[in-house]
Image: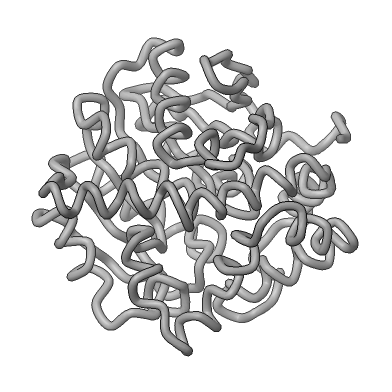
Length: 301
């Protein structure tokens, strides 16, 4: 991968943190209470570049790449997909935060990062002050409500979860075309307009790595198996998110495909609040001002 990519976070440190399961690359900057921001698929920490400066005025931001993504290490694939479970990823980022001196922190996650974030809040509520999830619903709810229309909307869940190496071989045949089609198809206007050329350069760089393509597919295989079981076990046991939760979604996004996203989140967190933004799936890049303000309002009150 290239090492001379544009710096999207001037003034931030670049740090690699060793955890028991992965080496996590992250950018750290700002001042104030810690706020951990987790990206989703098919992106890296760079998704936050449009909103980081304003948030850094109020918070110490920690922006890691999830295991297998961006500049972080690639855990080995396995038959049970355990290394890519959201529980394992949550454990890794929680350990990273402890290494950085943050035992309790604010937490927000977009897409797959949102799944890691709510799993962390369920498994380690003592570590999370408040939780925001961006354009997702819980994993088991997505799988349980799949029908013809929703299946077409999230076809990639079934495709990427196919046994290795089928999906990764197809993606690797034309990774940039797949990446850019995926990004554009989830925006409100179905184009790449909201993504800066520098941000796209970062994404194209790591997404061409065959090992990372495999890692991201393994992320979805975990979602279809072990992550689903973890969610169902929590629901049946009555385990709920006990910290304040804000759900944000785009009116043309993926979570907004259901009739009432907030009602679904309140099954998991009765005190959840919600807000819909005028955009597609990529809130921090399609609607940076509204996303920033919503996060500031939530985390500072």
